[in-house]
Length: 113
Image (tube, rainbow, N blue to C red; front, side, top):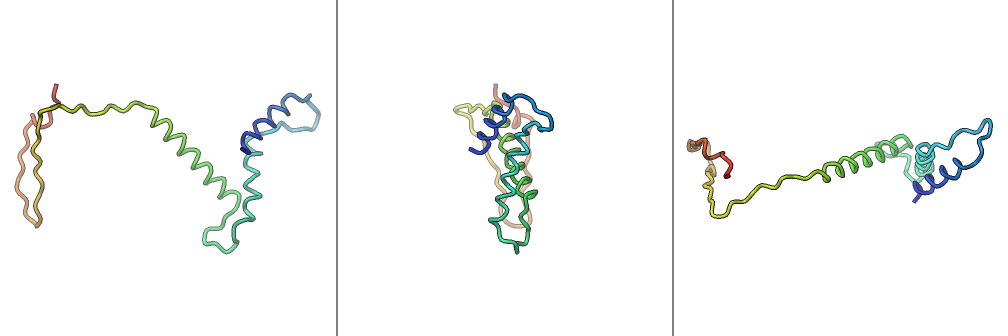
């Protein structure tokens, strides 16, 4: 909600006539200022001190992870084809220190066509 307000404020200030000495409204900077006020809600005697820079780091990581998940999720992942009627024998090792030798053939790893 606050981010939407910052965007609306930037659009409004962009429509105002330019004045000398007035800096451009920076959305990113204004958005991060809210963490300065939030810091007072945390106790001072924590093992990891919570300051505005720490909160900004956490938020940046969360946003990066969300965007990474969205980009990974949007790609189509090829699902393995299931061939009906095919069976596979699994060789599960027994408990202990000695295991039976398992032999594999080239055909074991061939994809069904």
